[in-house]
Amino acid sequence: MGLLLSLLPAVAAFFIIYCVIRHVRQSAKAKSLGCRPTPLFRPWDVLGVQNFKIELNGMKTNRLSYAFSDRKNEMSAKMGRDCKTFRIYYPPGETWFYTFDPKNLQAVLATQFQDFQQPAYRVGAFEALLGLGIFSANGAKWEHSRALLRPQFMREQIADLGLFEKHVKDLLDALPAAEEPGDWTPTFNMQPLLERFTMDIATEFLFGESVHSQKDDSTDTSTLFSKKEMKQFVEAFFAAEKTTAKSLLYGDLFWLTHNRKFKEQCKAVHSFVDTYVQRHLRDGSSEKKPETEKYVVLDAIVADVEDPHELRSQLLNILLAGSDTISGTLGFLLASLAQYPHIFKKLRKVILDDFGSFDRPKQITLSGLKNCSYLQWCLNEVLRVYPAVPVNFREAVRDTTLPVGGGSDGASPVFIPKGHLVAWEVRLYVVSQLLCLWLLLSANISSA
Image (tube, rainbow, N blue to C red; front, top):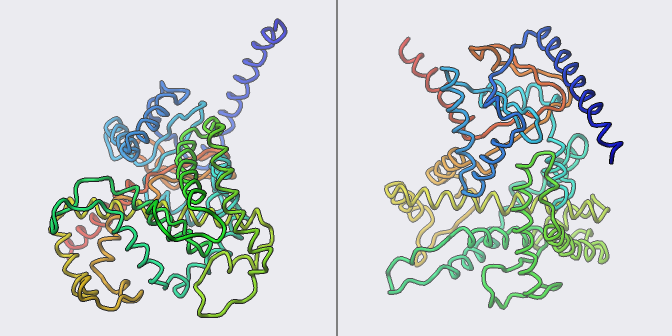
């Protein structure tokens, strides 16, 4: 103990010297590249503890997006201008770059794509539940996952509207009944029903069998699992998914949220999916099936992937995309329609005109749905205002720059050291982009 205490001053001195040398080196390189410093959000919060508390509270109260917009507003007031790029401290004392400028996002996601990757902590946070797949991999592994999964969502693969119809009926049957015939249903929480609805569709699309989570008394059965086991899988996946989302707020300390309960939930999810994978590998389900048989993702990818762990990972990555984001979008759509009755009334009329009513139905086709412009506009507006993935991040794989955001006016380039993160809130980015477009349009009209 005495030896450790005696070493503390030396360790502290080494750390301080290292930080000074790193700062001098980075400052010199930034200057050589014509970069200028970016504004710093709450400089006194050196360890980022206050910022972490803000985001954690935002997640608990379902107002995480507001935490980002509040920061932007605070920085704009401080700088006396629309501040779209700034630095922020994050536990345990890391510096992140927040940007909502379209030019910077274009650099990160397009023109300088090779300079950035998924953050290492995000890969670690997702890997515990999902394994390595399109949401939790970088480089060649990400490209492999993308090439493997992209064909699974071609037009002909998702045109089985019969699959959707039966699960829509289950969803409607699960709604609480009105007290009197013809009345509205009582007030209730729709989100759990939407989550189970998308889970039922996704599992049938992936495994060929739905978990039928919508009703406990369902007579539908699985060839491999009891009703109780399917329910346990659904509950474990939803719980582990929420813990994974929470762990992203912890950055490199994501593992602090991976407690015993979370690990047990991941184990239950993996065991469930592994059972389907092993059956396909054992029974030779990679052989070509008749064209009349329904499309199943596992049947399609098992021909290209032999490793059972990779198969499980690819399926779980699709399951996340096919359940959580879609249920969220549907929830926001219904909430928005409730807030804007005139939009609901117009959309309802369009639906009845194009697809008929329950008593007098018309044929519903994929092309018909895509050509229903007003429905597409409503969905696009929901995705604009309530993005399916509201926050995103990238980590610099080398010393690089962003086009704008530095200096007192925000017009100079920004130096991004290797290993530092660039984060953005999608909704604020879209708003900034729209403002630029409207201002440009206004200027063109004025000069005409």
